[in-house]
Amino acid sequence: MTRSIEQELIDEQKQLEADRSSFEEHWQECARYMLPRQDEFFVDSRRTPGEKRTQYIFDSTPQLALEKFGAIMESQLTPRTERWHRLESSVPELNDDHEVKLYFDQVTDILFKLRYASTANYASQQHETYLSLGCFGTGVLMLEDDVGRGFRYKSSHISEHFFTENNTGLIENDYRRFRLTAKQAAEKYGEDNLPDVIQRSMQKEPFKKHDFLHVVIPNDEYIPGSVSPKHYKYKSFHISIEGKKLLSVGGFRTFPFIISRYITSPNETYGRSPGMTALAEAKMLMQMRKTDLRARHLAIDPPILTAHERSVRKLNMKPNAVNYGTLDANGNPLVRPYQNAARIDVSNDALAQSREVINDVFMVKLFQILVETPQMTATEVLQRAQEKGALIAPTVGRQQSEALSPMIEREIDIASFAGLLPEMPDSLKEAEGEFEIRYTSPLSKLQKTETALSAKMTLESVLPLIEIQPDVLDNFDLDAYADIVHDANAAPARLMRDPDQIEALRKAREEQQQLQALAGAAPDIAGSIKDIAQAQSFAE
Image: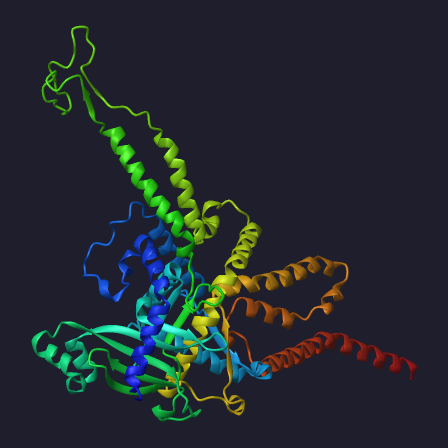
């Protein structure tokens, strides 16, 4: 008997869920100590909203380190106050075309305007995704087409997503199992389209939650450039798991789920995280902290030792209180506190060591260098910055290729389809509009700083030689130097003049210099002509 498409997709999701069960147990442990508000794993143990989730927390270091990790990733990859990428043509020759440069500048400005619009909610959702990346090793950001407005972003919990890689290692399918109330489902899909069980729930318990499945997979009927959803690159299915009913079928031109991983082990699809690396240290820190708190409580408020339960009356522990009958005839106390001679200061060192390891795993120590040593010279600061960039580049650089590039490509597709982009220059149309993404984030600038610095130091070392040999600058192409500095600082294309304008300016300057030279030489020429005339007159 042939299975229906909805039954087939539900079975595939269940298989993927069973395959990743060991990951979910690992994620739950990481969430317990580092991100308790996202401890939302296992369908049969749904959390109650507002439920206390910090019962395992005795030290906040792992949570704070994860928050700082998210801030580090954002500051190095997608800072809110900077243009952290630009676009250029895939055809190198076109990148010298000033009109093409200005076009890509305009497109970049539009993307940033739409991305950071108040309705898009990008910055906060990207930060949540970075936290998921640091804790679980995998982050999912949904990018939706907000028709008529632009983009809309939503960080999605990793527990909802089940995916696989294609033969090239790219993620091109996603099975998202999520929950909606009966009322929300009726608003989204229409009450008449829902299965009977949810329709009955709509009448009696409209706020009861039900399970749904959204599947996005490559379309085997894909036709490039088609405007029909049937022939888009990806198929989309919405299914009600209760009742096993197909609710809607659609498509996407680009993959709507931006799925990134921190690092991956061979033969594993889901990522591994700094949180997993720090998990053992975090669990040990919690145990040490719990023991330390008990020891401190015992030292500050110790048990009271007495010779006999009737030898003293009830003690008054208030300040300046008088307790009669607590001394024997010789003045020796009949009551004394218990002293276990515990070395609490020893635990301070152990706790500090564990905290340092956790901060190191989340790269916090790496970014404290410049703060802790403000007396460094400018050269030392630059060297430390270059070292920092070299250390984090392999890790966060992956986010550029696996997360940010697909996101930008989808943004351009949505904006282009909505008619929000400017008219493309003819030369770029002939190249079919192919473009490349160039990242200009602080991380990318750190990687380019060395080239610009080398050029600057070379030129500065030669400048003193001008007094000895003025034509020494003939060895250098100062236009190329300007291009190197411009590229390293990721300055906008509109800062640089068009090559035709440069040529016109230089030609006008040369003509002006020639006129000035002629004007300066005019008195000498006039005097020479006068001398020649006088000489001829004497000769005659």
